Length: 447
Ligand SMILES: [Zn+2]
Image (cartoon, rainbow, N blue to C red):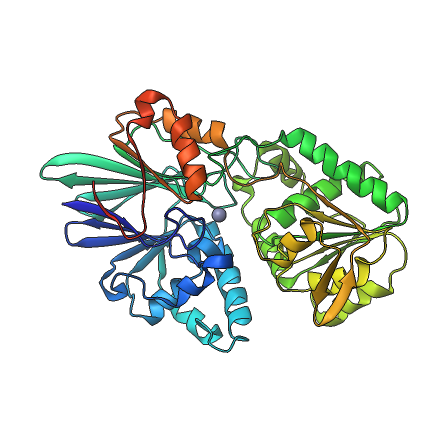
């Protein structure tokens, strides 16, 4: 008998954690952190016994997919962790950074000491289009999910009472056109699909138009002497921004405008990215083949230490500052916001989703004044955002992913707000809609 249960990201978007039981073998797919308003769920029990999990398969290195792995190991998980090599390299950086932030808290979920035992369990790397026998009758394979560098969607083939079955777990899947990494690959056959539907209710703005918009906004502000602050996510979004700024630099539109990358995590992730030339799109591969770095240009300064970060203040006039965190909840971006938000010459440009309740969301929502480190800051700077860079597929692309798959018995929707999942279900053609199920937390589904 085979069963699926969700212990995170069921009718919500964070805390991805899915259990697949095939006979006596237990596979966990992702073990992510709950974020934003769901954060308190991190302190609750997993809902299963971590000691009894045989394999943990990680689809990609975002914290909402890997952030509770150290906790899983603390609670007795000793199995094998399987992912792509790129996901492992990025996960190392993300988990250490996460532990560094958590250990400042009063009741940390885990600390830096908990990370090494986790890294020792990463013993199997599976690449795209390869497969691996976990057990005699359980075989897994990966395809490029096109979400971030190293991201994979998973297929599990298993046998039940002599009958061959298969299930696809999408992980997070990306848009067809990506700024730097290669596009997703679709599956062609599966009986069960477990698919994210974060943007199941909408179509994204056109990517090329969004890129133009981004460039125009930056050039306009800096050419009028303004400071542009870009709160950025360290993983993939920062590298996309660096690549677009490099284009502006080559077009001579950044002359004498210094660009600062003020995030040790983003600097480390960017270095790791260049170790995987095969995972980029053709445009980036061409640059790499010429021996050039697609994320570097003459105006760029990287600020690793605190002193280097403080030094940014000394540069007068127009400049561009890329700093984490993406939602302004922590990191160095807060200091830059405190300094530059009050001047109407400047701009804060958001290029990523802002979760409700975060400082980023408050600024974007148009609040007059915000509080940073006990100081009230009046917002006079231009607040702007670019929507089209999303790393998630939109409604049309999700339907495309599903329609490529034959022999479907059931489509299970996960990783999305309930109302968006309902809209997505309605949007699927009648033939497909009849097969759709919206997964509930801890529901056990026979597959
Ligand atoms: Zn993700």
